[in-house]
Image (cartoon, rainbow, N blue to C red; front, side):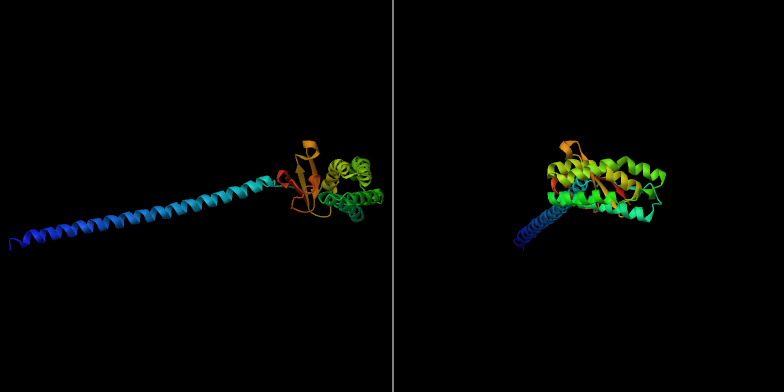
Length: 224
């Protein structure tokens, strides 16, 4: 019996030691597993934040960092026939704009020629006194720009288009354009002096750079 006690005691100690080692390895494994999971979650969060930052950058580049200002035309009551004639002028302006987006010199010339003719058919007797002042202030310049674009090469067309856009903007801001129009502005156009244009779509296609360079464009206003 004296010989069995040390053996039994040693067996109990050894068994406890083995159990402690097993428990230690199990605990270590659990810690490693939890750390790996947390690391994966952190990585996912970083990826999500990166995607959000990229989206935010895209919005900023596309000019959407601040809300667009909504413009309501000055004159609420415009004679329907006059409104239709002015809409035709705006339609031809958009024809010129889209031709320049596509680097199409011939179509830009055609659109400008049609715009010049449409202005000649406007019945100015339908303007009120206040309306006529607004139109008269831009009519001669607008006709001049349309005439130049109808006869010029594309680089010169774009120069006159930037000035034409300012005049069309005054007409649309006063009388409307028969549709929703977006006021776009590119600070790099016109030798980095900046230039604006009106577009019938939210999608930005820069007429000064053949449809490219959308990332620099701001859209400060929408005219409804």
